[in-house]
Length: 387
Length: 224
Image (tube, rainbow over all chains, first blue to last red; front, top):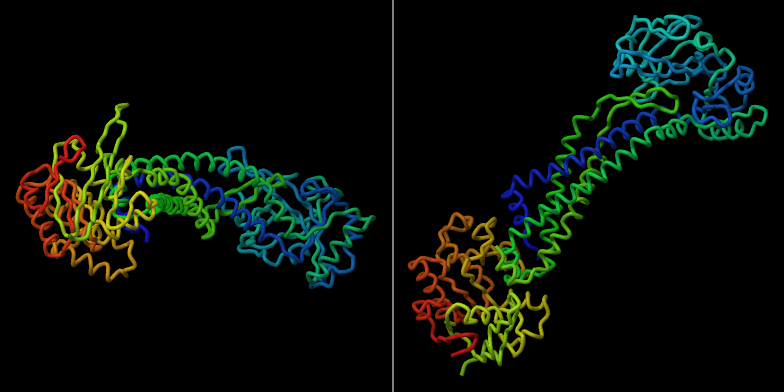
């Protein structure tokens, strides 16, 4: 049987200052990693919930985002009447020709303003996006310089509040409504009438994309194949869900840098844990000798000190979770492939916290292994004579 | 003649200290029988503690034979020695060597962790041992909450809790005042007399040696 766990726990309590300092070092490392993961998680949740699997986004062949795609009205007419597109309430195909541009909004945290996506779309585009609804004001009227802004935009930029005017294109636009898209990316967009937006952006014939809806998943798949194989259209179709999931690539640099910084910090924390455990082994040398005399094996000694290091680091992991928890729900923004900002919330999920604790335990294990081995290798008489 | 518990034949222990070759024990041949209370006496550096450490298998001899309780200690590996020590030997240190973060009861329970006893049985055995040494009212005290004499009595309880045949004590009164030292010696004598334990006591105190039924003197690593 192993040396009782109480032995390790009480030793951690007895040298509480060292324990807390080491655990805090580990906690900071875990907090940095968790902050990055919470940010990525929040972005993924936003982008993943932005797409509907029955929606098919059609872009120019070779384009990987709406902003660089060009779509002519004539192509849309060919697309709109393809077999397999669901019908709207008015009996017309659920297909929306859309234009996507970027406008600069001031008044946020960034002094130079922030780019946000402005989308011009047809009524069918609104009907298709059933998850998006007005929370205050009303939808824009066709043919007018009116826009509806996403709730996240309205919250972050006071100049986009209901009743205010924002300037882009060739004049001022009235903010007539605020829309809620749940955790979807549409909450970070500004929507207006397709023709009015296209006219103001001077792109009446050079639109961006089309969104069509299929009645079911099987038809959606067939429709995607049909569009992609249509040589005349020369368009690239993919499910809207896949499109948004692919957009998480914009967070890749943050992910790499975050993980790199975490690894550097992890090495430091691991050495801190190792240092603490080496000191513990040196200080308790006589106890190690005594335990061996009582009959505990070298492995029992190794295991005991290893577990102590793991407990210490697990404490650091829990502290790290507590440090990062206040970030949960905080709204932030990130540039996307559309050269504009998508806002989302930090999402500190239980899985992320468990991952953080596991990460801390790995740190503690690596840091504790050598001191534990050192403890187990001590000869009894040498251990008893050390002070 | 009663059963031989400890037998050493030409036992020698040499080591290097600061590049000097030191002979700590030189060709020591000795027999200790079951139920004896033996004192090993001698000045500092005479090799008495080295002999005790060899008997407890805490160290390995350079040459010679050593048999304790029927086992040739040189033939046992690390794990077997640990198991053998836990089962057959109770060791008492000069500096008590209690685990400071564990209570008296937990300290005494420690060696029982290596047995097959269940928790309630372990607690019962440890409590009995502590009562035997007169510390039934100090079960949940930490070592720092006890006097030196009480700490040594906890150490004795820890040494006897597995009911070993052999009790080895290395200067057990060295860190105690006269009264506490007397209590410890009385206790060891009682364990020898009433429970038939074989006791080997290392001391350089003639008064302590008086409690033994047999005294061996060592000088410069040799029996005299």
